Amino acid sequence: MNPEVRDHYQAEFARIATRLPGAEVAWVRAARAAALVQFVALGFPTRQQEGWKYTSVTPIENSRFSLRPSAAPRVTAAQVAELALPGALLLVFVDGRHVPELSPLDLLPEGVRLTSVAEALARDPEPLRMLLEGAVGLEATGFAALNAAFLADGTCLYLAEDVVLDAPIQLLFLASEPGIATHCHNLIRAGTRSSAVVIEHHVGLGDEAYCTNCITDIALASGAQFTHHKLQQESAKAFHIAAVRVKQGQDSRFHSGSFALGGGLVRVDIHVSLDGEGAECVLDGLYLTSGRQHVDHHTCVDHAVPRGTSHEFYKGILDGASRAVFNGKVIVRPDAQQSDAFQTNCNLLLSEKAEIDTKPQLEIFADDVKCGHGATVGQLDPEQIFYLRSRGLDDAAARGLLTFAFAAEVIERMPQAALKQRLEALLRGRSPDAVKELL
Image (cartoon, rainbow, N blue to C red; front, side, top):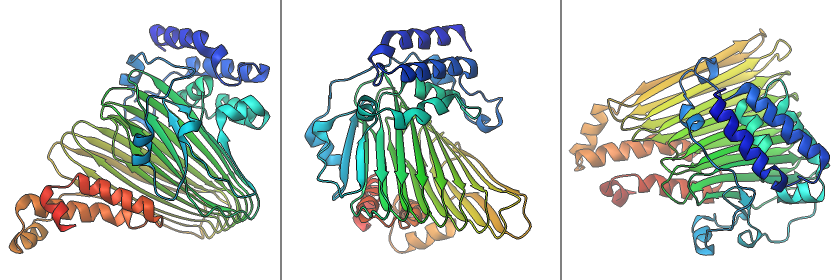
């Protein structure tokens, strides 16, 4: 690691470590210190590593973001209300810290525990020991170690057995100040036959550079049904690094939706382990890029036991000189007989300078399986454009309508009405005026 980078993070750690949540607990302090040592040893990922071949994080490494143990909210209730989804339970985080006065939670059903990581570290840190100490394991990345060392907040959600939470939970992460890095971690545990929907929403309120480093860990017990959607609307100059890690028990059901609409440099890793027989997961995603944006999605579905099902459907629309990366890996272990796995990645290039690197992967070590994958890269069909123009639309409107229809196929797969309406509104907002009048 560059000595200047090492010295910066070590100095930041010395400056704020005693003011981070849980600093009064000996094992928390030790875990943070060990994570920092691991980060120094690992450093930031480089393009020499296969998983980062097409994505350079040098701009993050060269930046000197400050880390703050606390921040006074610089967000108004009106701004939050504009972003809140109708009918959702709302937790608001501003610059990486939970703001209770902006999080008007109604009474939660019995069997649901929902709190911030900072509060959990203050009241009962022991359940979070694996979260902090696990960052220094063999599979740790530099970003994960950095997250554990500087973890300030996040969400803890626990669903007891047979609890069904009807209202979705919206975790609204707002970035209001430039030049800072936030490290959040969401920890979700869904009990046997429980059910819930969580919408993780990241929004940049300005147009300056900052860095978000967020991890979400989800564990589903037998028969649990859980939906996690991630909507990313960061600043055009922001860096967004995220990981979603899921472990599924027997006959559990998991649905993921990843929507990347902002950010200058974005990397999202989604790893799902089907650890129980009959588990099923659906991964949907949509990324829209323009200018010089770089958006990278890496997904991995690990079929470890028999009779697991995974279906993956990602689409990308690229304009300007932007670049996207999609790497979808499916692993079928030797004991995972009768697995059913399929993935599709479709990309639409709207300009000659836009670029996509797509790499679907299947690693199959069992013989009684049904697996497949496909990837497409193309431009708008001239015949479809001609047809719409023959019906009275100009060229821009015809292209805009076809682009909207291409993206809408993913949005239509979202069963949550409020999220679907929000995504459709955002998509309309990026369309030409002539298309808005038609929709």
